[in-house]
Structures are given as C-alpha cells and as structure tokens.
Length: 211
Image (tube, rainbow, N blue to C red):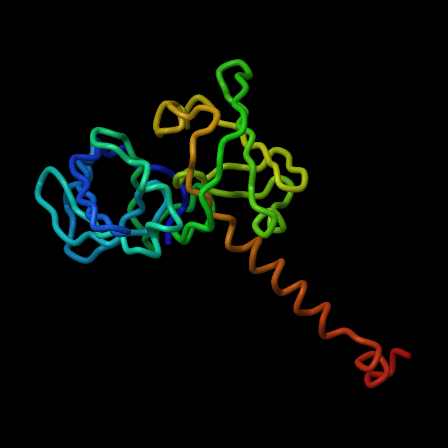
C-alpha cells in the first residue's frame, strides 16, 4: 500500500528484456539503500518486488501481466523513474490510498502552463472514466493528483511547482504515456452503489412492505 507521495527519483541503469518480461535495475537518487530481499517498492506507481540489490542499486522483475499493463516497455537506460516505498502503519497518509496496481496506460493530451503550475489534460478509457469524481484522486506514474475537472473520457489534473521539482512530471509532454491508477475507494464506492441498486427491485419493495 502506498500514498502517491513520491520519495525520490531513480535512474534506470539496466534493462534486461525477456520477450514480454523485464529485469529492471534502478539506482535511487534519494537516500533509499536499506533494502531487504523480497520487499515491495513502487516504480512509476507500479508495485514491484526487489529481487536483488546492492548499496547503490536494486533490481525488480516485471512479469508479463505487469509488462502488458504498465509503461515499462517505453523505458530507456538513464531514464528517471518515480520511487515510493510502502506505507507503514504509523506513517502519515499525505496523498491517498494507492495499491500500486496499474489500471491502464493513458496518453497526455495537452499541457498548459498556468503561472508556475501546469494543467494536464488526459484521455482515459470509458471503463475507468466511470470512476472519476469531482475533486477525487488518481495517480499518474505514482504521483497522487487531484482531479480538477472531467468530462466523459477526459480529465484534468494540476501539477504544482513542488510536484514538478520532485518528480518525473517536469518532463511530461503531449503524447507522453503515463501509468494510471484510479482511486481504489472511488472504485469500491461505485461498485457497491451498482450492487445495491440491483438489490432494490419491485419484488424487493413488495416483500418489505414499501408497495
């Protein structure tokens, strides 16, 4: 479990491609070096397992399922990635509850500068756009962001100067592909709402004396 508050950047040192699988080697730029074998880490918002490490780098295995759902196929050597370690039970939750399970890769449609901030417009699939809510949350490449507006299969989020200075978002451009995770709480609420609607039928109302 994560919060979408990026703890630092990492530099891609190695990419070993095995058809639809990857072994990724990353060097943290931030002070993250007390790793343990088998622990989790979010790389560009995707929850991965550390399979090997040294004082300077760590390696993770990217399975075919993860490869098909995330944007790791576009990574290159020396590229920067966003890093976040799992949430501890006594930690502050500064962003929102993030699972590290990518829903889809989305394209940045447009970026507009507004003072020192940037407004980012996205195109989202129809199935995931159903979970968008006004002022709700989502993650892009692991960054917790607030939805400023949405319409059908499009939405906008704002990148403040602090986010731009600490994450890979500073390099985003129109056409850039980012990992999207919809807010798990929004998905859960939407699913429960649909389920409860299906339970209320004419026969249900008759049975319980409402008709």
